[in-house]
Image 1 (cartoon, rainbow, N blue to C red):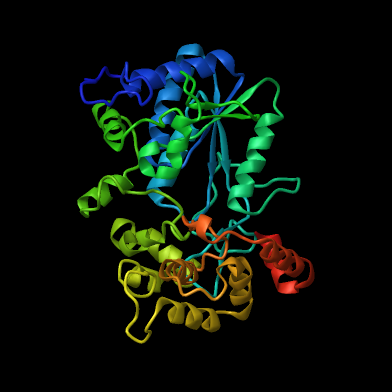
Image 2 (image 1 turned 90 degrees about the vertical axis):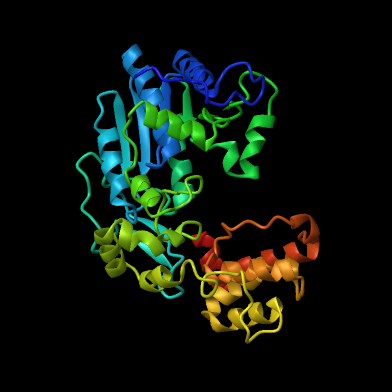
Length: 384
């Protein structure tokens, strides 16, 4: 790698003695010294790409190999896939590129709730890659997060000790800052309670550090970022992810300009894509910024939506929200409206006032009773 000027790289979060780049290189060296199996969870985004380049350099120096894990959700930017293919083909990489049937949430539609990614008999957005794992003989979880846990357990079963590297940065959300305060030690970035251990190597990097490292070293990164930048999108908030889940679907508003071929294929593949592309950035269909004029309160709007969606979904939401009761609390009702509009029946959009709406014993008894007796609730909880 070309040597770069570190003057503007931030200091480490705990002691602040050295910059984060030097600290991260030491962390990577520590992992190669102490672990037999090293795995990087990869998304094609800027953070995991920084980690890829740093880890790959250390692997070359030591003539070691490491696992590169990417769960291909089919509805991905082509720029992401191009970069993944290049990374997976590097000589020090053991590719774990999974292109196997899995259910992905479709936040753009209340009719087609899932993308059955890579499903047999489905017309895929693109062909499978020769480097990927295309089938699994044994049973495996068919949902995103459970599949990730399954992959971690497979790593745990390998000979020797294992560590999984994750590209989280504390700057991105308050919830991620917990990592830096878990342990007041030089190994604050490493969690060793369970196998495989988890390493957050760039937890104290800023987005400025990330871009400085990639640009000044002239390293490969996802070219979709360049197109986003040319459209004037916020550099700090640019996101590369699955195109249709509840936290990323707003990218559909720009997808026709960023990757028109990907947009056309996605529109043919899934319901709701066209509507989401039109309204994703508006204060109407998918937003909770403004209360529609037809309704006097957020509670009234929430009740209307619950009665308008599919009865099974309405029953599931009511089961999940029994702690709220018939509250007219504005923020609680806004939260419920947001989840209904985005069809977030899985509860991925978090609620930050749980201390004010805790489940009582009566609530839990009610939930357990329905989970055992109600066929609709049983079906959805099994899917969860």
